[in-house]
Every structure is written in C-alpha cells, then in structure tokens.
Image (tube, rainbow, N blue to C red; front, side):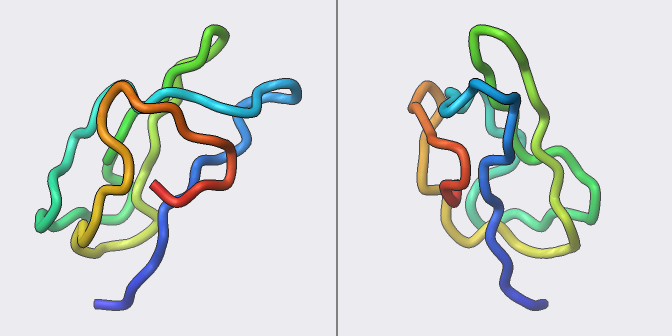
Amino acid sequence: MSSFKIEVPALGESITEAVIAKWFKKEGEVVEKDEVIAELETDKVTQEIYSPKRGVIRKIFFQEGEEVKIGETI
C-alpha cells in the first residue's frame, strides 16, 4: 500500500481552524477508499473526513478535542 497524508480541508471562506470531534479509526487499522476516518467541528460546520484510498492509519497526529488548522496533516 502506498503512503499518503490526510490534511484538514478548507471548511469555509472565513474558517481557519477546527477541532477533531471524533476518530472513527485507530492507528494500525485498515481503511477503505471513501471510508469515514474522522469528524471535524467548527462553530459553523461539522465535516466528515474520508480516506482518499485504501491504506493503513500509521500515525494520528491530533487527538479528539484538539484544534487543527486548515492544511495540517492529521
């Protein structure tokens, strides 16, 4: 399996950060393409993050409740 990064997507014009609300997968787990792996929240939007392809979660950089900035690898 190839390596890839999951980055925080743009969530709106004036939104610059979000909070990791929930992880649906743990380190070491296999994810399938288009499977939900995490949920991000802001005061305006809740966004699910999907895996762009099949792979294994190697490292989770932010825990639930932590703030992340748009473009950061989670």
